[in-house]
Length: 210
Image 1: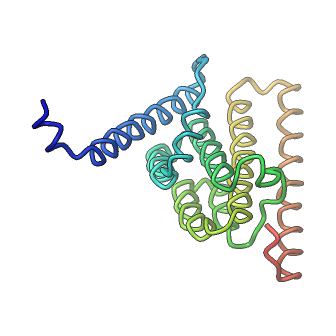
Image 2 (image 1 turned 30 degrees about the vertical axis):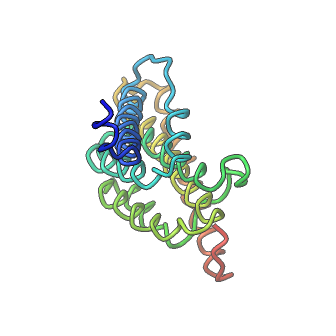
Protein backbone atom coordinates (compact mmCIF):
# COMPACT_ATOMS: atom_id res chain seq x y z
CA UNK A 1 0.00 0.00 0.00
CA UNK A 2 2.84 2.36 0.87
CA UNK A 3 4.50 1.58 -2.49
CA UNK A 4 1.27 2.52 -4.30
CA UNK A 5 0.95 5.78 -2.37
CA UNK A 6 4.59 6.67 -3.00
CA UNK A 7 4.26 6.10 -6.76
CA UNK A 8 0.85 7.75 -7.07
CA UNK A 9 0.64 11.30 -8.36
CA UNK A 10 -1.99 12.71 -5.99
CA UNK A 11 -2.33 16.00 -7.88
CA UNK A 12 -2.94 14.29 -11.24
CA UNK A 13 -5.48 11.98 -9.64
CA UNK A 14 -7.38 14.95 -8.14
CA UNK A 15 -7.42 16.71 -11.52
CA UNK A 16 -8.58 13.53 -13.25
CA UNK A 17 -11.47 13.13 -10.82
CA UNK A 18 -12.44 16.79 -11.12
CA UNK A 19 -12.48 16.53 -14.91
CA UNK A 20 -14.57 13.37 -14.69
CA UNK A 21 -17.03 15.11 -12.35
CA UNK A 22 -17.45 18.04 -14.74
CA UNK A 23 -17.80 15.77 -17.77
CA UNK A 24 -20.67 14.01 -16.01
CA UNK A 25 -22.10 17.36 -14.86
CA UNK A 26 -22.11 18.76 -18.40
CA UNK A 27 -23.99 15.73 -19.68
CA UNK A 28 -26.44 15.96 -16.78
CA UNK A 29 -27.12 19.62 -17.58
CA UNK A 30 -27.69 18.85 -21.27
CA UNK A 31 -30.02 15.97 -20.39
CA UNK A 32 -32.07 18.21 -18.09
CA UNK A 33 -32.37 20.85 -20.82
CA UNK A 34 -33.58 18.21 -23.28
CA UNK A 35 -36.23 17.19 -20.76
CA UNK A 36 -37.32 20.80 -20.27
CA UNK A 37 -37.41 21.26 -24.04
CA UNK A 38 -39.54 18.15 -24.40
CA UNK A 39 -42.02 19.68 -21.92
CA UNK A 40 -41.62 16.80 -19.49
CA UNK A 41 -42.57 17.51 -15.87
CA UNK A 42 -39.36 17.44 -13.84
CA UNK A 43 -38.46 18.91 -10.48
CA UNK A 44 -34.70 19.01 -11.03
CA UNK A 45 -32.84 22.20 -12.01
CA UNK A 46 -29.53 22.54 -13.79
CA UNK A 47 -28.59 25.93 -12.30
CA UNK A 48 -26.70 24.64 -9.25
CA UNK A 49 -24.56 22.35 -11.44
CA UNK A 50 -24.03 25.16 -13.93
CA UNK A 51 -22.81 27.60 -11.28
CA UNK A 52 -20.43 25.00 -9.87
CA UNK A 53 -19.09 24.25 -13.34
CA UNK A 54 -18.37 27.94 -13.99
CA UNK A 55 -16.89 28.49 -10.52
CA UNK A 56 -14.45 25.61 -11.15
CA UNK A 57 -13.26 27.16 -14.42
CA UNK A 58 -15.05 24.93 -16.92
CA UNK A 59 -17.22 27.60 -18.56
CA UNK A 60 -15.59 27.18 -22.01
CA UNK A 61 -16.21 23.42 -21.99
CA UNK A 62 -19.80 24.08 -20.95
CA UNK A 63 -20.38 26.60 -23.74
CA UNK A 64 -18.83 24.20 -26.26
CA UNK A 65 -21.24 21.48 -25.10
CA UNK A 66 -24.19 23.86 -25.45
CA UNK A 67 -23.05 24.86 -28.95
CA UNK A 68 -22.85 21.23 -30.07
CA UNK A 69 -26.32 20.60 -28.69
CA UNK A 70 -27.70 23.69 -30.47
CA UNK A 71 -26.23 22.63 -33.80
CA UNK A 72 -27.63 19.12 -33.37
CA UNK A 73 -31.13 20.45 -32.52
CA UNK A 74 -31.25 23.52 -34.76
CA UNK A 75 -34.77 22.72 -36.01
CA UNK A 76 -36.31 22.00 -32.57
CA UNK A 77 -37.28 25.43 -31.33
CA UNK A 78 -38.43 24.37 -27.86
CA UNK A 79 -35.14 22.62 -27.09
CA UNK A 80 -33.20 25.42 -28.78
CA UNK A 81 -34.93 27.98 -26.55
CA UNK A 82 -33.88 26.04 -23.44
CA UNK A 83 -30.30 25.81 -24.69
CA UNK A 84 -30.18 29.53 -25.51
CA UNK A 85 -31.48 30.30 -22.03
CA UNK A 86 -28.73 28.13 -20.53
CA UNK A 87 -26.09 29.90 -22.64
CA UNK A 88 -27.42 33.27 -21.49
CA UNK A 89 -27.31 32.07 -17.86
CA UNK A 90 -23.73 30.88 -18.38
CA UNK A 91 -22.61 34.19 -19.86
CA UNK A 92 -24.30 36.14 -17.08
CA UNK A 93 -22.67 33.94 -14.43
CA UNK A 94 -19.27 34.37 -16.09
CA UNK A 95 -19.84 38.12 -15.95
CA UNK A 96 -20.31 38.00 -12.20
CA UNK A 97 -23.85 36.80 -11.65
CA UNK A 98 -26.07 39.28 -9.81
CA UNK A 99 -23.21 41.79 -9.71
CA UNK A 100 -22.94 41.98 -13.50
CA UNK A 101 -26.01 44.15 -14.10
CA UNK A 102 -29.45 43.67 -15.60
CA UNK A 103 -30.04 40.97 -18.18
CA UNK A 104 -33.07 42.82 -19.53
CA UNK A 105 -32.24 45.42 -22.11
CA UNK A 106 -31.65 46.05 -25.84
CA UNK A 107 -30.35 43.24 -28.04
CA UNK A 108 -29.96 45.04 -31.36
CA UNK A 109 -26.23 45.51 -31.75
CA UNK A 110 -25.49 45.50 -35.47
CA UNK A 111 -22.79 42.83 -35.07
CA UNK A 112 -25.51 40.39 -33.95
CA UNK A 113 -28.19 41.41 -36.45
CA UNK A 114 -27.32 38.77 -39.04
CA UNK A 115 -28.28 35.95 -36.64
CA UNK A 116 -31.63 37.60 -35.91
CA UNK A 117 -32.34 37.96 -39.63
CA UNK A 118 -31.44 34.32 -40.25
CA UNK A 119 -33.84 33.18 -37.52
CA UNK A 120 -36.60 35.36 -38.96
CA UNK A 121 -36.07 33.67 -42.34
CA UNK A 122 -36.12 30.21 -40.77
CA UNK A 123 -32.40 29.60 -41.44
CA UNK A 124 -31.73 28.44 -37.90
CA UNK A 125 -28.42 26.69 -38.52
CA UNK A 126 -26.86 29.82 -40.02
CA UNK A 127 -28.23 31.89 -37.15
CA UNK A 128 -26.73 29.58 -34.53
CA UNK A 129 -23.36 29.55 -36.28
CA UNK A 130 -23.28 33.35 -36.34
CA UNK A 131 -24.18 33.57 -32.65
CA UNK A 132 -21.31 31.22 -31.79
CA UNK A 133 -18.87 33.22 -33.91
CA UNK A 134 -20.00 36.56 -32.50
CA UNK A 135 -20.10 35.40 -28.88
CA UNK A 136 -16.44 34.42 -29.02
CA UNK A 137 -15.61 38.09 -29.61
CA UNK A 138 -17.60 39.22 -26.56
CA UNK A 139 -16.11 37.22 -23.69
CA UNK A 140 -13.21 39.46 -22.63
CA UNK A 141 -15.16 41.81 -20.34
CA UNK A 142 -18.04 41.41 -17.95
CA UNK A 143 -20.10 44.14 -19.66
CA UNK A 144 -19.73 42.38 -23.02
CA UNK A 145 -20.69 39.05 -21.48
CA UNK A 146 -23.92 40.43 -20.03
CA UNK A 147 -24.76 42.09 -23.35
CA UNK A 148 -24.09 38.86 -25.20
CA UNK A 149 -26.51 37.17 -22.79
CA UNK A 150 -29.15 39.76 -23.75
CA UNK A 151 -28.84 38.81 -27.41
CA UNK A 152 -29.45 35.15 -26.64
CA UNK A 153 -32.46 36.15 -24.50
CA UNK A 154 -33.75 38.31 -27.35
CA UNK A 155 -33.68 35.43 -29.80
CA UNK A 156 -35.64 33.27 -27.34
CA UNK A 157 -38.54 35.75 -27.49
CA UNK A 158 -38.50 35.41 -31.27
CA UNK A 159 -38.72 31.61 -30.99
CA UNK A 160 -41.66 31.87 -28.60
CA UNK A 161 -43.53 34.08 -31.05
CA UNK A 162 -42.97 31.70 -33.97
CA UNK A 163 -43.82 28.66 -31.87
CA UNK A 164 -47.11 30.26 -30.82
CA UNK A 165 -48.05 31.08 -34.39
CA UNK A 166 -47.13 27.57 -35.56
CA UNK A 167 -49.38 25.92 -32.99
CA UNK A 168 -52.24 28.30 -33.71
CA UNK A 169 -52.06 27.49 -37.39
CA UNK A 170 -52.56 23.80 -36.59
CA UNK A 171 -55.95 24.35 -34.98
CA UNK A 172 -59.23 24.97 -36.80
CA UNK A 173 -59.39 28.48 -38.21
CA UNK A 174 -62.44 29.61 -36.34
CA UNK A 175 -63.34 33.28 -36.15
CA UNK A 176 -61.67 33.65 -32.74
CA UNK A 177 -58.46 31.93 -33.87
CA UNK A 178 -58.17 34.14 -36.92
CA UNK A 179 -58.43 37.21 -34.69
CA UNK A 180 -55.64 35.87 -32.47
CA UNK A 181 -53.41 35.14 -35.46
CA UNK A 182 -54.02 38.62 -36.87
CA UNK A 183 -53.12 40.17 -33.51
CA UNK A 184 -49.89 38.18 -33.39
CA UNK A 185 -49.08 39.25 -36.94
CA UNK A 186 -49.60 42.89 -35.93
CA UNK A 187 -47.38 42.40 -32.88
CA UNK A 188 -44.68 40.79 -35.01
CA UNK A 189 -44.79 43.66 -37.49
CA UNK A 190 -44.41 46.19 -34.68
CA UNK A 191 -41.52 44.18 -33.22
CA UNK A 192 -39.70 44.14 -36.55
CA UNK A 193 -40.32 47.89 -36.94
CA UNK A 194 -38.88 48.51 -33.47
CA UNK A 195 -35.86 46.35 -34.30
CA UNK A 196 -35.24 48.31 -37.50
CA UNK A 197 -35.71 51.65 -35.73
CA UNK A 198 -33.27 50.94 -32.91
CA UNK A 199 -30.78 49.33 -35.27
CA UNK A 200 -30.81 52.48 -37.41
CA UNK A 201 -30.48 54.62 -34.28
CA UNK A 202 -27.50 52.59 -33.07
CA UNK A 203 -25.85 52.84 -36.49
CA UNK A 204 -26.42 56.58 -36.64
CA UNK A 205 -24.91 57.16 -33.23
CA UNK A 206 -22.05 54.82 -34.23
CA UNK A 207 -21.93 53.36 -30.74
CA UNK A 208 -22.12 49.77 -29.61
CA UNK A 209 -24.42 50.35 -26.67
CA UNK A 210 -25.64 46.74 -26.71
